[in-house]
Structures are given as structure tokens and as C-alpha cells.
Amino acid sequence: MDPRFLVGVMLVVASIAGVWWLVTTSSRTVPVYAASETLTPGTPLDRSSLRVIDTRLGAVEEGYLGAQGDPPDDAVVTRTIAAGELVPLAALGEADAVGVTTLVVEPAGRLSADIVRGTVVDLWAAAPEGDGYGVPEVLVSAATVVRASEDEGFLARGGSVALELAVPRSAVATVLAATAAAHLLSVVPTEPGGH
Image 1 (spheres, rainbow, N blue to C red):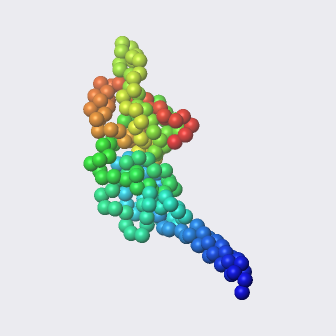
Image 2 (image 1 turned 30 degrees about the vertical axis):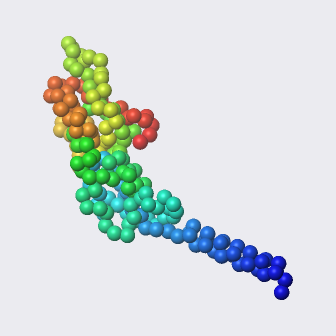
Image 3 (image 1 turned 180 degrees about the vertical axis):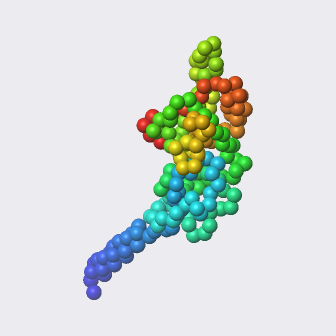
């Protein structure tokens, strides 16, 4: 038998096997967790806020929270995870490591339509001055909205707007002092028109 014929047959068989392997591995899906709602920093991770999605991740599979078992105990979110987004392991940590807590503030005026759960905002304050207020200053940069007054069951007293923000623990005293001193508070999205 001609050796060239055998080499040709071996090449065809190797090519078919390679294509079969490529199709099999590229179509393999794995179950991973995705956020069923927007998760903000400091939110404990549990099944009620997650859903399972079968997806093809390939080489990046190790970077996401697999759904073969329950979510890790005592894990909290360290950055905002949008509803529908796969849960990256890099966005999870322990509660002590997150370094944020939540505060409820009552900003002046109406909220922008851009301000919803998960929106990153700057919290501004203007001190009382004479019959008005002084020049506003940023109290907290990049705070995350946990809840807004339009959310179900979360209405502020007396018709004012209430906003629950995740802020760094180091900023708590500053925000409380501004609130106690009757500063005029405002929130501004860090990315206008987006979340």
C-alpha cells in the first residue's frame, strides 16, 4: 500500500477528530449564578437574589461563581452587580473586607430618573449660610444607591425624598455631621444618563 495514501487517511481522521473535539468543547455549557436583581456593595449573597444560567464560558469559567452548589456562606458583594449579570468571583468578599455601610439621606428636590438601585452617585452638601446656603461640596464620592424612595415600601416622612446609600465607613461621621447641621444634600449620578 502506498505510504502517501496512509498518511492522507491519517490526516483526514485527525482533521475529523479535531473538528469533533472543537465542536464538543465549544458547545459545552456550565451552570453559573447570575444576579436576579441589582446587587449593591455589602449585600449578602444568597439564593433568593440569584438565578442559574447555563452558559459557555470557555477559558474564563474559573472567574465566575459556578452553580454546582450553594453560594458561599457569609459572602457579600463588593461592587455593584447588575441584574442579569453573571456573578464574578472578583466581586465577592467577606463582610469585614467590604468597608461600606448604608445610610439613609434626604436629598433636596426630586430624584433624577437616572437614580435607581445600583446607580453610583456623588453626595453633595451645602452648609446653611445667612438666608441661604453656601457653595456645595462633595461629601462622598462614588456612593451606591441601595434603595430610592420610589421603591416599594420605602417612603420618607412628610413627603420628602429618601435615599439609602452604601457609603465607605470612613464617611459615616461626615454625612451624619452634615445631616445634623441641616446641610442641603444633593445627589448627582457619576455617569449621567447611565447606571
